[in-house]
Image (cartoon, rainbow, N blue to C red; front, side, top):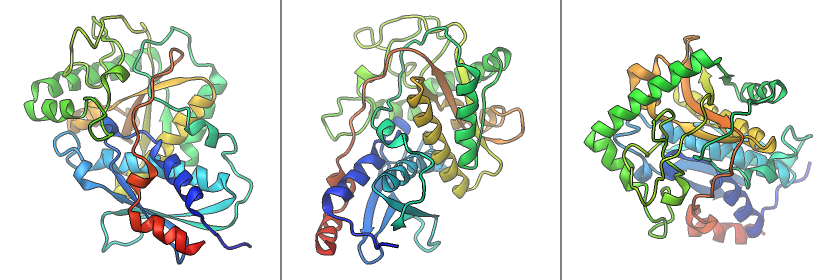
Length: 330
């Protein structure tokens, strides 16, 4: 078993892969630290980029970090190491959400094609076609969630309509809540300011019938940015859930979500996230009819690829001393 020797370019590649993950409102609420003595990467919460009104419990922040963690695991395996992962490893350091130690030679990877896919995954908030997802693809998406300890249901049209009604209700509540609307607006801006948030070009068109309300459209309707166009009549909706609802379950759900999104991307399936109903406890309870804990609602389908949203660089996500530590460990 060979010891891990991590040089600076590889470290930067690993972190760049991690931050390619999706996050709520593209807040990118994570920061990374390298322990050069054990060749372990720490992922910590960046609480300053949390959403106090939209995500008061931090659940969406944990899901976002879980997505970055899955990408990091995929990248570590791609470069030939075994990613030894621990969730919430130090109770006395609540901001330390996960660690990934680079250990020995990776076993046969269960994600051989996902490293290339993680760079191509982008949320698409544009209309999809009416083409349905083939059953083999639906099955593979459900298996992807199961591998990470979560469950993915793809309900029938009647149940999908019920879920969309909950999303509509949540979007109306969000629009009427001045604190939530203002917090949401703050993250939809010109990303040249600080490299965070969602640029208007990534929002896509507004459905003039509001059949499929998308995140931010209700709060940020503007004729020069959001052109009214109808979305698909029967959107394909999926619900990602976990049996329990603890902090570790939120991290597992994030890893499951990202694996599902990467597998979908590998099959040419576009995706966007409908998080609105999850932000209201009474609506969240109604999202999963199996009495599980819903963690995310996804919209899946075939259509235009969404534009990439800006990402922080590896230098920004890592402290400068971590890059210096990598230099010393060479």
